Amino acid sequence: MNTIPNRRLALPGILAVVAIALATFSMPAFADDIKFKLSGDMEVPPVATKASGEGMITINPDMSVSGKVMTSGLAGTMAHIHIAKAGANGPVVITLNKNGDNGWTVPEGSKLTADQYQAYKAGELYVNVHSAEFKPGEIRGQLMPPMMAPKSSY
View 1 (cartoon, rainbow, N blue to C red):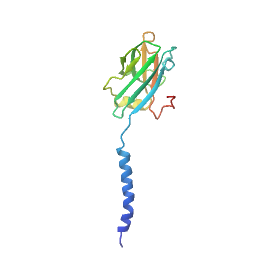
View 2: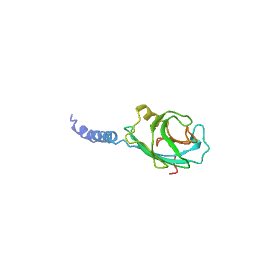
View 3: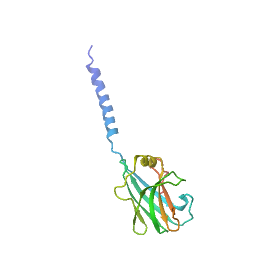
View 4: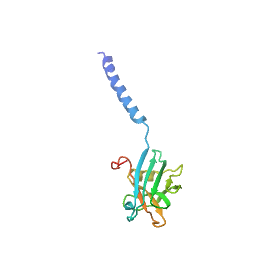
């Protein structure tokens, strides 16, 4: 009995499976670009303020972090990325650099640890901007991974 014709029929199927597997596993991992807003009502406890802010933070698969935050209505004294879920306060992960009167940037070379990256994936990182009036923080914005974030108005 000749089995060569069966092998010829199976070869395209095998090649298709290999091609799909290669495409799936060789796709580049993409960075998460997180756009977010900061407000006093997100602070813990909430802060009555007219101050606000907007930010764009990029977290790459290699756990490197970059980005900036712009604020208005406050004289910020410090800004940080912290680790904690919404509704809770937590320790500083990255201290942001002041850039002008209302801007903050993530220092070049900033990187999360593996535990901090997992916390980010769980929606447990936030940006906090402090002021002289509200030393623990005047405005806050939670960093939600794109798959967890609600549809944005951006």
